[in-house]
Image 1 (cartoon, rainbow, N blue to C red):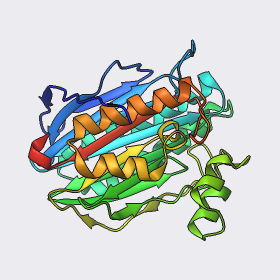
Image 2: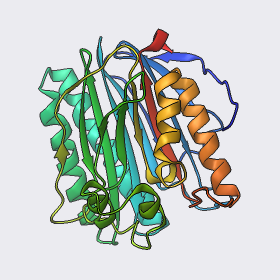
Image 3: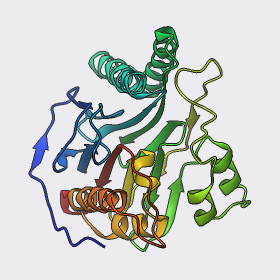
Image 4: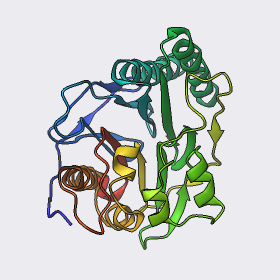
Length: 284
């Protein structure tokens, strides 16, 4: 693995403030003190790509001990994909910030933002779509909301996987059912056929149950640019042991390294890559 030991300067956000990333190509992660820990975000274009980054992301401070993490991956061609992921992230952020300002329940604000984004993407009428992975951290608990094959992962300090969302795709459902293993899924010709996206009339949101965050847990929301280039064991090993800023730097660095060179026995699928890592370890 890469030997990066990078810890970004930790920034602060006021309650109701958001940091949004659209068509970004970051040299290193940015980190924020939120929800009693640190959230670190990085989003980069596919190596050698001249078009826009079709991924988008956001971090929102929703309270003194709560935050929202958002990752979206656009599809439908570069311009359409970028437009869809931008709409997805900005719609959720807009509704949640309004909810914070007016003291409204954020669960409904998140769902309202997703529904509004779905309708807006449909109304583009250009074949655009987007996946979405949202995590609301509140008073030491995390709840997931997701559409498509961007995923959310929660790992304990000893490496136990406490949560991994199921990709809304034929391959994702086959993995969940035990029909395919990880290596078969990574190489499957239909891996990127996604059956549930923003921009579809039948779009649905999978809402997870609240999960208590232990002190040494690591939390990750990521687009398939990361998930297609690292094995789950590699992600878990980094996520369980290190502060969020270092996790983000290491995962993104290893993902880009895999994309740039095909090596036997390693996954290799060049794509835009976006992730947000969260940890309460030393607020780093």
